[in-house]
Length: 234
Image 1 (cartoon, rainbow, N blue to C red):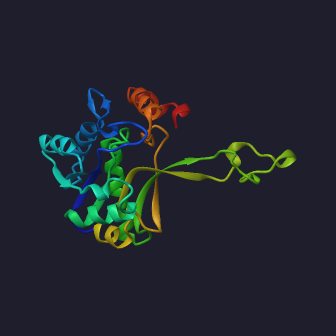
Image 2 (cartoon, rainbow, N blue to C red; image 1 turned 135 degrees about the vertical axis):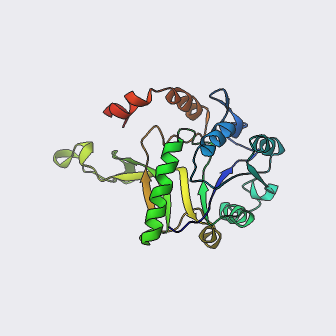
Image 3 (tube, rainbow, N blue to C red; image 1 turned 30 degrees about the horizontal axis):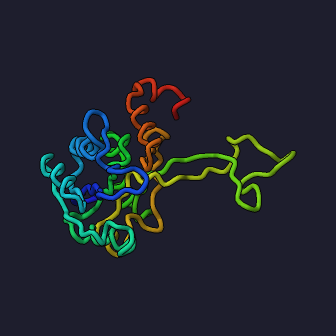
């Protein structure tokens, strides 16, 4: 990719249905928002960091950290007045930069080295033209059912070990990248042909409720060397 700017967007809002004040929940001696801003500021490949929020309190945290802010109207935050896609488009239209890295603070275990690798990968795939965007995922192989029975395996003699099941992916939402103009066009943060950037289970944690928050706090302190070498954690 020719030299083009990358703007990291940290979307936060005052309301949270499952966990009150989720985005500023205490975490690692600070809070989730400040922790994420500290991570992003260590990534030299990011040209600009912007916090988008309806909350004056959260925007002040951003100002105090020396990053940019985007004051978002309530209708783009209340999940009722407009669609999620409208909110994504509005944010993309309101910031500068050639490419956007969507970096929620609810994914606190995505660390600077992972952002660096994701950005490098994104630049390669965009240059090649094989993908239109990048999204982080967690791969899994599990026995799955719907109301009609097994979805990805058979009962009885044809049952197979889970290692032989087809691989599927959770969209982790920790890293989402696309050209800014495309986000505006799609009204979404990735396209129909995204590169699946696979994260491990720990990095894929997405905080939605109190249990997720406690898991992230516990996993934060895992020794990196042990984590990288022990297959139990992969």
